[in-house]
Length: 114
Image (cartoon, rainbow, N blue to C red; front, side, top):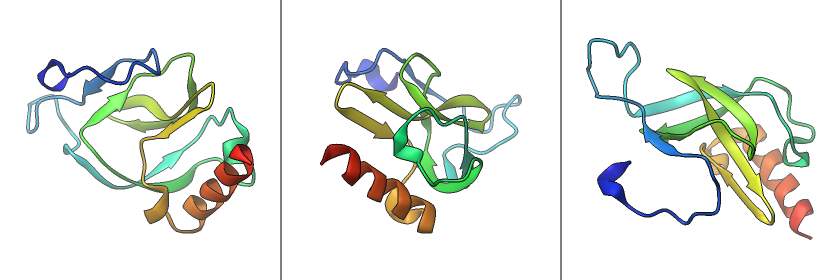
């Protein structure tokens, strides 16, 4: 949505802006900066990661829920916090800043690509 920039076209889900910062209908701040939980896992990427684990986010845009969604987060609305298609994985959060949960996700990713 930002400046009509072409994305990589790997995933079919739209990437959208959370909304006008400070808007009357906006109860949560944008960008989202901080910890939020991830749930509804649909991939071995999240093996040994407890449902509703917290990961660290810094973002103003989100990928809509869709057929490639493998984890969900709810901030303003439910969105894809992780996506998978073919040999591509993408996460909205920062695993490297997400403590033990992020470490487990990175370990799982290494196992998936080996």
